[in-house]
Length: 447
Length: 50
Image (cartoon, rainbow over the protein chains, first blue to last red):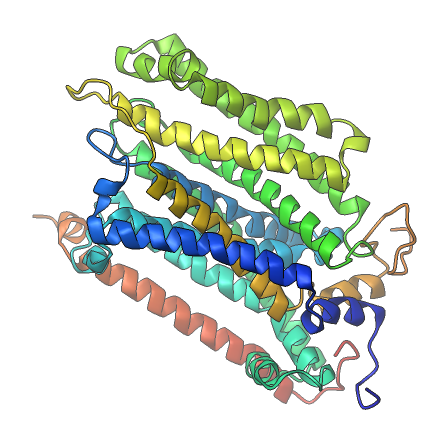
């Protein structure tokens, strides 16, 4: 269209997925939608018949919904880590992937909160958390921290979007009406003056610094849900940092998965390249090492102390009925990352993708192994409890993961995948966004 | 009964704190957005990035 403003290479790349929708996209959307529907139907049955349709029973009163809650809040760390920490340390290569990471935080937190609602059974009693809320309860600490973290993360996601909204408003003149309206509203009348940019960058920097301790607090408080009880192997001071490390670990893994799929589907190879895979791959490897350290520390301390109640649980994990899951987790979280990522040729899109899928599964197992074994062998005078998730729980879990992917995909069909102004800023300052064997689209100078 | 004990053990006080925290955050973030946008009223040459 001749009346369309001229677009740069970057703008064409970023606008393209917003403007064109392939058949493959609709097929993926339909598949995810079907899985979400399956989960929704299962939830409707649970709502009608009560939590009796789940495998939950005394003494195992938390099951895979709580596993999912810990897992989803954990992966929400991805956005904070990649965006906030790398922003504070002024790592220029982060610019093309920050929004991909920040969006994970917002949606993962939504899904995490949803798991609690699902686990409640009587969701109509949600307001009782506020009406009868006492700060004595770690659950209220969670409610406060996760709520504040969610609000702050959405704000942090929105800030760098403002100039991009204005650009879409001004440059995509042929956009459908609803999009024009949306971009105009979200641009908030942005004019792009130097003073506006100065204030925006200042606020983003402050938010980055605020979000790092907030995220650490959230994952600590989630761990305190367990740590403040006297269940065997839960009542431990190591849980706070252990949860933070696990959160960063799984968050980076999920970021790799989404980043790699979007890069391939939307042809972002010139903006997300070897540099991101190499550096983030090293970070994932380092987090694997930290995770091994904490896992060893947790189990060795328990084993050496040999307190009977704790040994019951630890033995069930290491040698008993949970041992296939435990050793499977070790392979997925420790062996696979080290086997692939220590080599430079392993830190490629394919190598990191394989490791990330392994880590995401392994970390979900880790959350399962934290929640369930302790409850099957409580200090109280119960026989060993048995927990077997039912098809209802499986359907709701699958539906939740599908909903995360669906929301994520839908978000990037509406909003630009990269903060264009930040990427351009890097080019202007001569920073290298991508180091690739292929010809980079951005003109890099050695930095 | 000490004030600290009353604060953390009285039903409803915790919920009130949560509501206040959320409201304060929403107001602060809204004002910060306004502050950024008010930067457009400052007389300066338009930045080349937009």
